[in-house]
Image 1 (cartoon, rainbow, N blue to C red):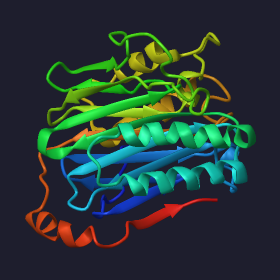
Image 2: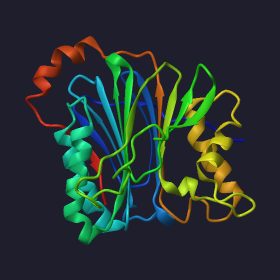
Image 3: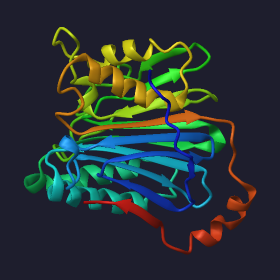
Image 4: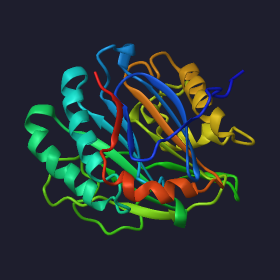
Length: 285
């Protein structure tokens, strides 16, 4: 029996960045979104893992941004990259478009690559007034999306995009472009960002699950409830074979679209918040 996440939701504060590279399980509320985050570093390391996760909210709460990066290494080397990503996100917290941030990430990793190795990342930005979700990837698996109207899980691949220097890990090539797409969301839809520990887990026959295996597992759920998805996946995958989700960092970010709106008070106060600093609630090892 899998129990849903029962944590009391916390409201994402406007002009805030939250996240890090430590073990965590959280449930947040933001305009138009419920957000669930679970991360377990390799062997429950107290020095932090190589999965770096962040959430940001703009001055009014209209822009919610998500980052999941998977970097080579753990501990101190991963934390150095985590600090760099945090600083870039803070600079872009009030920008609707994420393209500048993704480009800056690539440049930053080009400078760090010789010391810190490579990294993959997925970035998603939800703009509540238009109910739009922008997604960009850099060498990382694309998100999985649940369409509530069709009750179907799908893989958001980039098959329709032009070919070229796309979807390379960060810092590999200065002129690399990063495939992305924009979706119009509906209440009840969901998206899942995940680290590669999930798709590199194996089934009972010692074969990689891959994206198709994860979608098959998710499709077992008759009526998906957002608080149930993460514990269900972790339990089912963990039962398939020893070492699944324990031999690497394992992180999931789930967003569930709701009908909640930006509060009038937050809209009115937003210009004054812009005069201050972004509230830093990150926890890095």
